[in-house]
Each structure stands twice: as structure tokens, then as C-alpha cells.
Length: 108
Image (tube, rainbow, N blue to C red):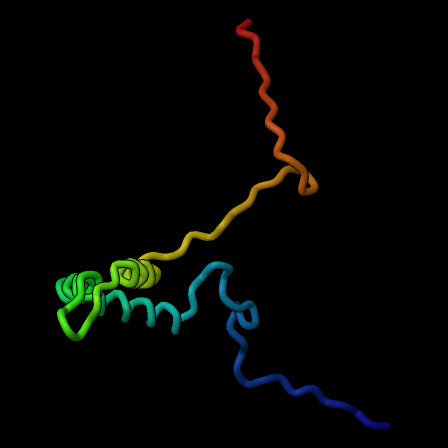
């Protein structure tokens, strides 16, 4: 007859072990990257304006005017400076339409 013996770990697990991050929270690497890009943009605010003007209006021989390209760059930079809004859809009971019920109360 074999007797099995369970050995407990010497270290107790943290109270939230295995639960993961809360929904919607940003992981550390993503936050660090966004912070770095934001700091880069803030530190070069004057240069970013000059760079966008160079792309939009050209620079003589080296850079051809590209206003559409400048707008694309602004849109791409904006993604790092501000968070994207998530699309949210609302629905009623059992994925049906939303029903609004208004009841009047007597003043009596």
C-alpha cells in the first residue's frame, strides 16, 4: 500500500494570484511605450510642427509637397497622444431593441 504525501509550497500565493489584470487595464509595456511616445512628442512640439510643414509644403529639391501625407502623419501621431474610444453598442433584453417606458405620477 502506497501512501502519497502532499507537500505544500513554502511560499503562500498572493491573494490575487491567477486572476490576471482587470478588464480594460493597460499592460506595463504598452503604458511605458505610450508614455515614451508622448514625452517624445511633447519634447519636440516645435520640431513636429516644422516637420509637418516640410511634408505639407515641401522643401525645394529634397521633399515634394504632400499635404495629404502631412494629415496622415498628424492622424498617426494623434493615436499615441490620446486613447482611442471603443465602440459601444446598447441593446435591450435578449439583444432586442431598447424599450423606454415613461410613467406619470399623479400629484395627489
